[in-house]
Picture (tube, one colour):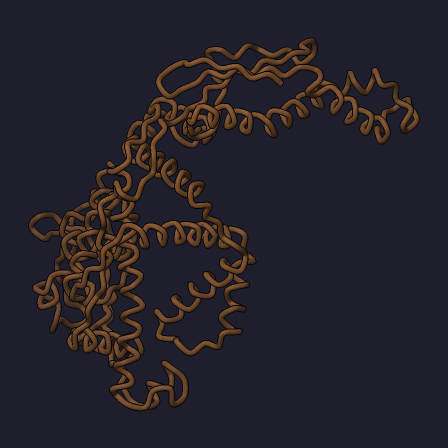
Length: 468
C-alpha cells in the first residue's frame, strides 16, 4: 500500500492511497476458500463447488470487503505517521475527494486508487506560562445563607394540602388561554386544558402579589416569558424551549382550578432522623452544620462548572489554532451522512469551529500529559455521582457497599458508562488546569449566585441566538 501527498489548500493535504494485489489478494483467496468449504449450491456437493464458480459469485463482494478492511486498519495510522513526521496534527478524519476520486471497476481492476482530503492544524506549543490565571472561587457562607437552606429543606419535605385561596407557598393548577394585548381571549390562540406551577417560580414579586388572595375560579393575566425562567416557562405552556420566542411573549389568561398550600416540615428529631439516619443529628446546631455541608457540596459543583467555562474560554483565547474552515464543514457534512444540510452547518459555523479548536487543544494536552482513566477510577467516580444525586434529596447516610452497588448498576448501561467515562476523563483534564492556571478567590454566596445566574443567562441568550 503506497501513500503520496500534495498540498491542495491551506491546511489541507490531497493524499493518494494505492492498494495493490499484494495488499489484499492473499486475504481474498483465503476468504473464498472458507466460503467454498461451506457453500451449498444446487448441482454441486458441499465443498465441491469449483473455485471459478465461487469467485464469480462472491469474488466482487469479498474483494470490496477485504480492501475496505485494509484501508480501515492502515490508512489513518499511516496518515498520522506522515503528519507527525512533519509536526502536524490531523483534524477530523480523512474524507474521499470527489474531484479526484476515479470510478472503480471491481470486476477488472487489480490496482485501486483512493483519493482523500486530509485536514491538519498548525504546529503550536502548549505552555502554562502563556495562560492567564483564572479565579477558582471559595464560597463563604453567612448565617442568612444557612437559614435560607434550612427553609428549603423544610419546604422540600413538607406536604401540600388543599385550599380555596392562594396564600403562602402554593402550587396552582390552571386552565390557560392565549390573550391579545388588551387581555381578551385570542381567537385561534394557544389553549391548555390544565397546567400546574409553584408561585415561588414567578420571577417578579409583583406577579406573586397579583395572585395571592385569589380563589378557585378566579383569573389572572401573565406574560409567561416575563413571569418564568425559560425552562420553567416551557414546562408551564407545554412547549419546547425553541418555541418560547413565538408563543410565550404575549399575555395569557390563567383560570385557577385547584390550589394546594405547602405545609412545611418542622425541624425536630423525627425530621432529622428521616433525613440523616437515627440520632445522627440531635440538635438544631448539628442540623445547621449538616445543612452547611450540603451547601458546600452543592456550591463546589457550581464553582467547578464556572471554572471550567472560564478555563476553556481563556485557553481558546490564548492559543492560535489554525485549520481549514472549508475542510471542517465538508468533514461534518460527509461524516454525518445527511443528518445536516450545508445551510445548517453554515448557521452553526461559529460554534462548530470553536468546538473543533477545543478538540485539537484537548487532544494535544491529553497526549502531552498522558491522561488516562482506569477502571477503578471510573467506579469510584460513579460512586461520587451516586452520592451527589442522593444528597440533592437530603440522603447522606447510604452505606458504602450500597453506593458501590448503585454505581456498578449505572456502569452496566453502556451509554451511561460511556458518558461517565467522558465526564471523568474531562474531570482529570480540568483538574490539571485547576492545578496550573488558577488563583483562589473568596466570594460571598449571594455574590456567587449572581455570577452563576449571569453565566446561565449568557448561555441561554447564546443558545437562543443560535436557534433563530
